[in-house]
Length: 275
Image (cartoon, rainbow, N blue to C red):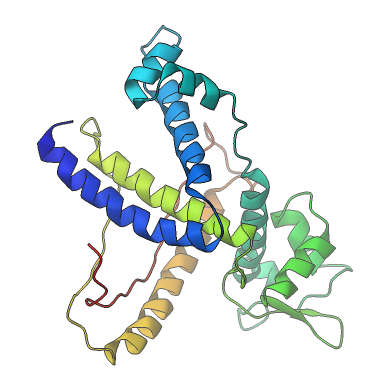
């Protein structure tokens, strides 16, 4: 890499690592553990994506690409792959249930709002909702999780009422920390795509920000942003559900792909002193 590009890239990585280091330290992850994760990822990416076509990626070539010694590459290759499947699936299933409850006409009341649902029985029930949009997971497990995070409540008559517009875990648990991996992964993957000189068509990536706002403006902007962003997300959810085979089984076509977009709010004091 030329010195022209290395300096801004190092500055960008420093900005990225500051909030990540806070999260890791707050949750007791040592530098040694982080180092092994980083080395595993370097070796995995170098092996999978930076090989020479038609040739097996050797330990020596991975060593050259990553800067790790051959001995270290061999050690890292023996480390078990981090298991993230269970946490990702738990988040996705709960999110799909809530999104379908807000979207599908069968589970809406006469006013177009999420209906009160009996747990079991004929017609539109919570059990049917879980069966359709959460896969082979017990209804009770999904219900307990949604009650736990405050997304639904069980009324005195036994029916279930939806309380939130999205699945947002309340506590810092494994499935909540998983949001860090999913959302930041998608954002950085988009940036990587747009920075790649071989990219034929860039992916949409925009933001708007101002840097001299008074304290009093922030609460109003938070409310305005949340209201408008939620409407846009729900509109996109309805469109994507019509074209996704899990939500609409009759959809035809080639391949299986993941696509979507994310919206996030940020604010920070100019006196924070981080570069």
